[in-house]
Image 1 (tube, one colour):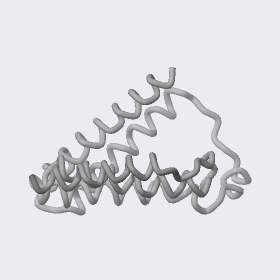
Image 2: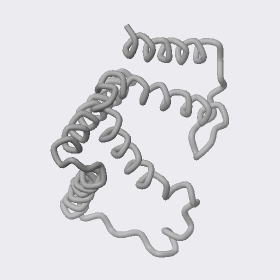
Image 3: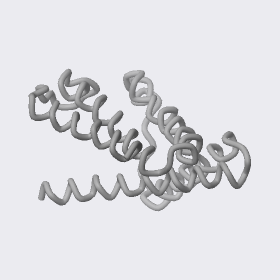
Length: 147
């Protein structure tokens, strides 16, 4: 079953590559980064609203919302920054270089989060194998961009 989760994560990566290319093209088409980001985020909000209406989840109470740690609320703004980065950088460096560098940054931060067990993620020690895997990804970024 674990291979299925890895395949689903890979499918999410496909979405990131498509999203970056689409947002970059939208920025070029509209001639403005702000509007490209805005319209992309509007699509995300629309999708979330449709999902919530279809699933009929009970809304959380204000007490539950207030009790969440501050860092639980950074996902939305960080997602907007990802959209903005894709819209700005993909036309400048290409989709492959953007996604490769994007994944390298994700991996570096994820290794640190895992090692520290931060943000309610199970702690996983930083090992030579994990560091080597990250080094290979960073090498891949260089090869994708400069060869």
